[in-house]
Length: 225
Image 1: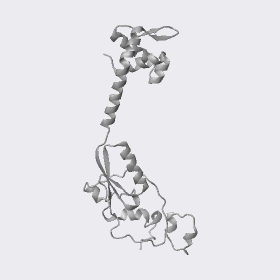
Image 2: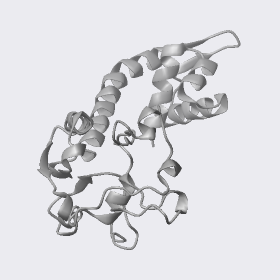
Image 3: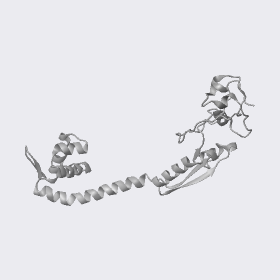
Image 4: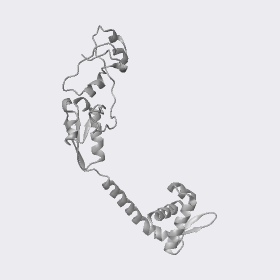
């Protein structure tokens, strides 16, 4: 029985007329190329190539076979490619929730890329308030949440953090006369012993602590106000 691999080897060899180059193009060994051609010739019942120590060329039957089989092979390859693309196509609506600070150009770029890759689908965007950050996921109201990469394993053990899509630097706001105001950069440890802003009642603790660590480097003398 003839298979697609034998036809691929035959058509490549018919173009290259060289077993070594055919093997290189198809990432095969020369013996594998020879066996594929021999199997095809046995199935047909006659030689398709004339082989000498100096050259390889198609027999009259080989030229006829190439003329007839090549268009059909290309059409079959196109059909397989189209079928694979259709099978991988995502249809329906992807529901994305986002916080206001995460709804900028990075999210827009991802949406455009997704829609270009999956033209049969659409995106539905929803603004998610801080006070109910993870509830829309749990209620199956959204499929994906674009948020800061913060999950408290004690409170969100049922959720999974995905890949980071954007990185931003943390900024410290202090009074102009504060000694830290004149520095180009500081470390979290520099905040040890200072009181920091209080967490709003409806703001998730894990998310707030991500921005303003209550105890820099494990120290206990930097409580929130």
